[in-house]
Image (cartoon, rainbow, N blue to C red; front, side, top):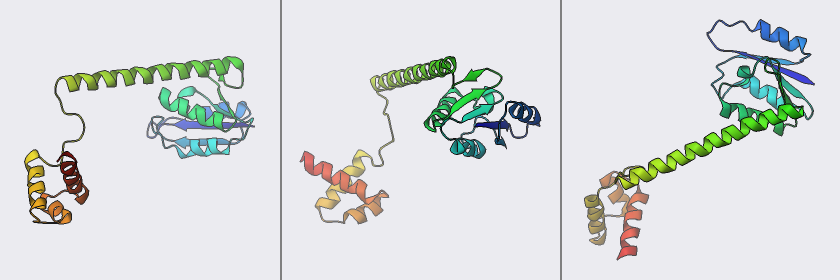
Length: 188
């Protein structure tokens, strides 16, 4: 069975009729349609269309950009279609994952996306190493200064408050106070 999916962007006054006509001419039934940005991940009609696919079915779109605007999202969508045991076909670009050349094209897109993710990961690791070597603190700022930690330890050792009372006094969680005290005991 060939299932169609047609999408126009919200507020662009685009006409969905040419897509519907092309999908009907391609033999699609049913045809899911919606008005939503292709950059959004939450497209309920696309989710319904993919959810309705059975092994051997084919999801058909008029043009690839009707399915997705980003390579990453496109690959996730194609994975979901494949997981359903279905194929994918784009009428305009002549991409058809039910054929060997179509599967090759999809695998090439996947290889480029994997390469892109590896490059992003490499740049991130290099950026973090550079920041550390420059002496920059990475991550969340500590909720307590060194002086405040010393005060918590001194008050706790003097019996001037429970961890819950000290947490309230320093406006942190009880687990933060307990962590400070545990670290002090381990070092002491």
